[in-house]
Length: 124
Image 1 (tube, rainbow, N blue to C red):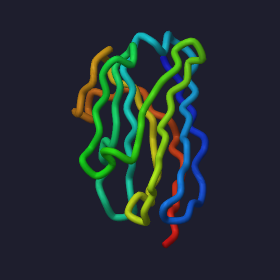
Image 2 (cartoon, rainbow, N blue to C red; image 1 turned 60 degrees about the vertical axis):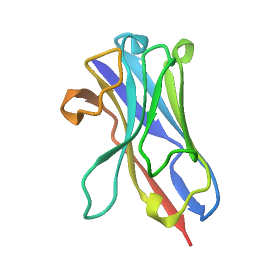
Image 3 (cartoon, one colour; image 1 turned 135 degrees about the horizontal axis):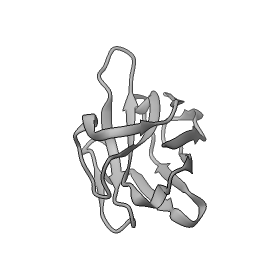
Image 4 (tube, rainbow, N blue to C red; image 1 turned 120 degrees about the vertical axis):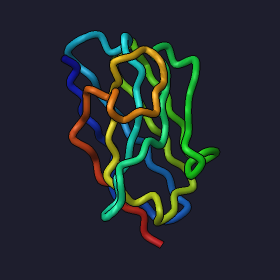
């Protein structure tokens, strides 16, 4: 089992920045890729960014490309999502998750470990 705990959410103004963290415990975090999902009210959960187990390859949804940066520090068992140039459409609950793979997958069904989520609200 891998336990994931997100932090760093909160309220930001449009154009501002937030940095989310995902602290992992339990089984070896570095054995798994990692993804950040978000779910806005009334919308389906979507994958916004993902990173391989060693951090060598990343994926970004088109909606966040160029604004968000995913990273990880396996020595600290922590993943990050740096979010810049935020806009109100980024308002959502953000979840970190780990799939049953060392490599990126966009298939949500393969993500077997989930955090509880952290709220991000962007005001205009």
